[in-house]
Every structure is written in structure tokens, then in C-alpha cells.
Image 1 (cartoon, rainbow over the protein chains, first blue to last red):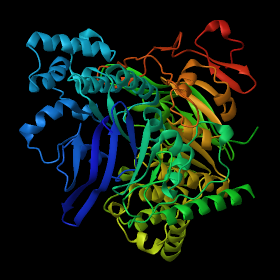
Image 2: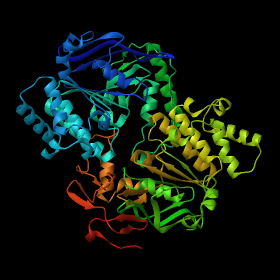
Image 3: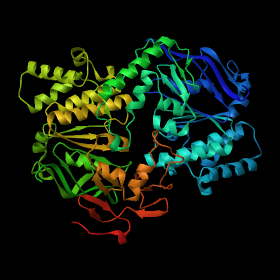
Image 4: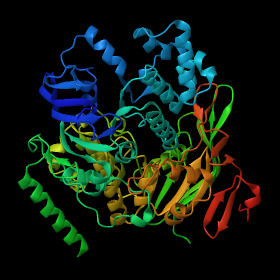
Length: 311
Length: 326
């Protein structure tokens, strides 16, 4: 398919410390098409952040390959990688940490343009002003510093900085998890608007299944470094196959007391030696990490659960 | 109506600063009845944690519960001396904090920390204390209590630490458990286990729970009664069904409207229009005076109104006031 933007094949990233090798990402393969948002959900330690950073080439993968627009970027040196860094940008979780407190907002926004050698000084200033307007901040913000802004506004600045170089692909790593609910809604809406506006392709990483559902077209579930299930969002949320996905989905607190669950299902956490990391296609663009026999087993278990719940 | 376990009336909590005084909790009244789970929901800076801390007289040193009363089973907690208060803490009312890592002593073994509470409150022998502790560890879901008993907190995961805190909180069979954002730093699957555990203890010991949270999902699953806090005030209070079906205050509507919900079609999240927090001179943030939601703007307002029996809203629009209470 020629509208493929990102292709990752068998990607692995290991970290080594005194206690041994930790396989943070282990044999992950995925495709991201132009204009779509792929959501990655997983709990802490599942490797979702490492996956995002490896795709962006902030980490050098131990195994596997990454293609961007059909060109392999896995082994590129820093100088060769620079043009791609303009096209791949990242929005970080905590704007308190990821933005310099000593720089003015103007400098923060213009720095990526300067690094990519885009435009003259006055053109850069003009662009920064436009970007401020796009993310809904007043022009007076240009001369201010980060500590003068609230959490939501800081994240707007983080978004502006990522998008000012007009990237094709954005990795958003837990962009709203440090924010209050009402502010979170503002930032999510803004991100969605900008995405349509600038025709962005997005990898949206979060531990919050509701937020991922709101933002994504397709959703992939990560557990202990593996992708265990991937499907279009409605398919995944209505028809989860893997028991871990089902546990995750049934753990979301539903903000509706009428639907309060009186019968609570047990939480299932699969043990470490997982099913083979290859994803199996089960129809409807739905992939599960299991072989067909296990999938049959899952289905039987589900039916039994439904029967026992109805009793 | 004599079933109130906890009754807070017109509580004011203020903080002394170098130059001025700031009010964190403003005229808050709430009650927790026997066997109930009462949720106090609000965003950061709304004063929900300060309300709960003043119940056990655990406010930071420059904070003071100025006016009002906090009655627990007929005792006015604000009039107690520190010595009398110690008999209440843990024994009668216990607290589960948000940050399990900070609440446990990293230099003490888990077993010692659990039995310490028993030592202060009940007079039983060392062996008895150990068997009670092992029993508690078993009840909060550890498969190997004997091993955990001899471990240090750093050897446990976040969810395990939070379960240790629950074991400690219920060890003296309190009548009221205050849980201040007990699951904020935990994963969803662990969050559900922890909340189910608190819920289980509540019914098991016939206790009550005051649940402090910012998550309407948790409120819908576990609470019986809800108080919504904004800028130090309670702006709406009703039973959990009413508040979800028919929220009246625009702030409550905004909070419920801004939750992403996979189970229904949502074109766009509704949100309060962007606001800047007002800051005091030390740079701490407090909630703003005026908010805008959809087409109505409203202020952190003045008096609480009963719009139907037992359903209170603090109105932003005086025309809609029906009866003013106390």
C-alpha cells in the first residue's frame, strides 16, 4: 500500500542493568497509514513509551527495522536523520519538564525552526505568532516564560513547538495525563482540530483507554513489551478477544451509575512467557497475538463467562 | 436521622501566609451516613483534600480550621486535644493516602509497620499481632503473607503498597475510612482491585467511606452520595443517580461533559473554556472566580440552595434560587 507512512518490523529495544536484560519492546510490528491515528494503550511498564521513542529513533533499536515513507531509517546516523526529525515530532507528557524555564515562549517555538534552518528570523517570528494563535494562546504569550502559564496552557505550548515545523507524523506520549479533566478535554479537542487542520498522522500513547478511544482510529494493546491485540477502535472495544484486553476494558470505571457492575469479573494478567509475538489476523482488520487454537479457547471461555453471568 | 457517622458543618479552613490569608475551604457542610460511600469530587485546588485532612486534624502547620464543626459519632473533633485525637486516628477513623510510596516508611519492614498500629491501639501480645497482620495481608489479596511480612516497601509494586496501606487502614476496624485519591497513581486493572477491596471492607465491617477523587467514573461505580467542590465551595450535592442524570450546576455539567466515554458516540468533548488560575503571591494556584461553559458564565458562588428535598445546588444565577438554607 502506498499510503503507508510508518512501517515497523519486528522492533525490539532491550535495556541492560546489573540485574540483567530487560526487554522493554520485544518484536513489535505495526503499520501506520497516512492521516490515521493509531492509539497505543498499556499499563505502566508495558513498553509503550519505549516503542514511541524507538520509532522516533530517540533510541537505537536492538533488532528490527523502521521505514518512513518507504525509506528505511533504522541505521541512519544523526546527520542523515535530521531531515526526518523535521517530519517526526513528539509531544511529551509533562510540559513542566520538557520545556526550558529559562527561555521565552518565542524562543522555545523558534528553536526547532532554527535547528532545521527554516526561514529568516522575521519569518520565524511570524510563524511562531501564527502557531500561538492556532493553539489558542494570546500573542502576548510570545515574551513570557513557562512558569507564567497553567498546566493546560503549557501543554498548548508543547503542542505548538511540536507542530511548528509542520511534521507529517506526531508521537503524543501521554499528552494529557498530567492535566485536570476539564483542561484535558480542551487539550484533546485542540489536538483533534489541529490533526484535521494540518493533516497529521499520529501515534497516540496513553494508559487511559477512554482517552485513546476518543483520539484514535485504530487501537493497539501492549503488554510486557508485546503487542497483544490490534484492531479498529469500535471492533476492539466491542469485540475484544484476548483475555487481557477484556480485563483492561472491563476495568474502566463507567461514568454512569445506572450501569454499575454488581458482578465484578476477575482481573486477568497473563504471565510473562506470552503467546508468540506474531499477530494473527482474525477478520475485520483485527489482529490478536495468539494462535488459532488459543483464540478458540478464548472464545469458549467468553461464552462460559457470559453463561455464568446470566445465571 | 441519627445515623450520621460524620457531619461537617460550615467548615472554613484558611492558610496563613507571610502577608495575607487565603481561604482553601469555604463554608463546607457535608455528612456521611452509616454504611454509605460519600464522594467528594473536584479538580486540583478545589479544597477537597483540605476538607478531608481537617477531619483528622492533619492540616499543614499554617492551615487552620477556623469556623464550623466536625462531628464524628457525637464528638466534636475540632475541640479535641492532640492526645484525644490520637485515640480517634486509626482506631475510629483511618485514612488512605494517594501516595503509597510516601506514606510507608522505607526503612521498616511491612510487618512492623502493620503491627505498629495494632500496638498503639489494642493491647495484645506480639504473636497475636503477627497473626492479625498475616490475616490482614491475606485478606488484601497477598498469596504469600509470610513473605510480604518480612519485606521492605521498595520490594513491592505500587498496587501492592496501596494494598498494604489498606491493610493498615482497616487493621483497627475503623468506623470511617477516608480515602484521598487512593488510586490516582495506579493502573486501571489495579485501580479496580484496590477500590473493590475498599468497597468490600466497607460492607464487611459496616463502616462508611469518604472518597476523595477527581474521577467521575469512580464516583459512578462506588459512591452513594456525591458532593462537587469548586474553589473551596461545595457547588452541588445529590445522590449519585440524580447527579449524573440531571446535573444542575454548569460546573458539574462541564465535568461530566468533559469525560471521554467509549460506550457512547462523542463527536467532541465539552469543556470549560480555557481559564488561567489566579495565583497568590507565592505562586500557588487557586481556582478562578469566573468560568464559562457553553453559553453560560458563572462564578464560584455564595449560598447553597435546596431545589428539591435533599438536592442542593449552589447557584450562580440568583433568579433561579428557590429556597435558601442555613
